[in-house]
Image (cartoon, rainbow, N blue to C red; front, side, top):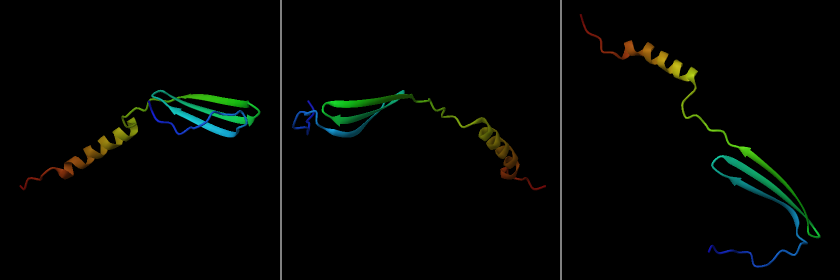
Length: 82
């Protein structure tokens, strides 16, 4: 069991806004809890689906890199003396 530093029970008179964030593998959940005292509260929840990021570079960058390599290749090749 994990230790806790909460030493009492809520009384229902608490006031304030509290934000909870849960970052999972595919979703980001955000929850705003507003405590209004007198055991009244309001909860606002939102769930966002995380997009999968493609690790490959975008095609224009790949093409530019290949063109640069092809253009510089003759300059890097050893020249024969004739």
